[in-house]
Length: 320
Length: 266
Image (cartoon, rainbow over the protein chains, first blue to last red):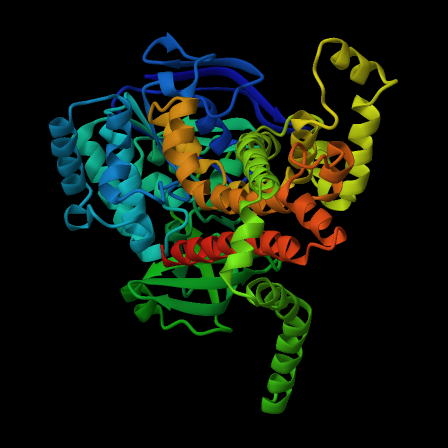
């Protein structure tokens, strides 16, 4: 288990962490989610011991490690820009932590082989990091961090430098890996979709504070405030209430509707169709339909339609 | 650029280098060996010449390792630890490049000379800095100080500290990280700096000339030997000494080129 309490960290005038308390259960996968400058990376680095907090405590597995260096925290850390040891082969990168611990050579070789198989880099043991793709480099980084069997695995925007396709693959793969190893894991990300997809629990941060902690579903369906509401997914305002775009029905007659609107644009995104509209007050909003629904309505820009919200997110949110 | 323009530029650059660098140095080699190897050998086996060469090498062998150690530590302090006041250090390191060696020599002369507290105290304890090895060493260290720092600082900045942080999270101590992660990354920069430091140390004359007193057979380095031979109408001695110096310089340059090529191959 990882527990932090009342962490404060300043960089000059900038307050990166302002009395942050949070925890991650043993064996769980927790996402630290937030926009840039929210303090999520700083929090991760404080947990790792790469930054020293101005105040507050860090506990890993019930032990207070606040004053301890990273070497003594039993962690594995994965960096956004890989931090690969450029002059070492893939195998030597993965073996690094074990060599530092003076494990027998045969054991190291076996462990490296096993890890490279786990991260699907079997044939690349003799390559140098420069000869790998971004996705391969990051998988090597993961194998390197896992080699020392850390109590907790900390990932700092691990897929941030990769292109969208590879990101999506690695994300699913990471979740799969976690289900196999059950290492307590914290992943930092600014991508709400990524957090929602991989994490059991999400800690949403903004401006050095924790805004809400909960399962992805809790955050999506009962956001604590408007910031959480808008950050975890798109929302539209229908007749004064916040609604998720897929919870709005488009009607061709005013019966039983909440609001009138005009179609601005219809965007086809494969299975999903996004309809952009303007209501009578001139406010823009978005509705998400399936392709079949859209085909049935035969919408075109300029059409006048009526909207009905199937469910509102939360009628009494506290304003931010 | 047009074809003729390119040719003109090439001719201009080569002409400039040829006239100002290649011609004078070649002339020294030519003059040295004009009458064959015999006279050169005689001039170089003269005890004063041998002593001068040994002294030059000896000074370099002490000054270069010291400046290498200092250079790497200093670059680390400037780039990694950002200690207060180290911005000034970064500028101060360039001082030997900006300052004329004669001024350096004079400054050492004033500090360690007679009538100054430091100089008198040292002399009182039997340590002679001026007109002796320590003074020449100090002068050489001073003038050849910036090179390792200047080579290592940009490389340290470029590689960043992520690899070192990664090593720390994997359980590596500071010393282990330096040896296994940082040093391999800055190895070429250090080598490069060492080569430049060596070249500067071997060729130094201005500051050393002031503090050594250029006593023949005692505090005369190879550069001073060349100067004296020339002034005493012993052209063969001067040419021979100059050829040895030039050969050392060319050897260091060649070494640097080879290293550079190796670096770009990786």
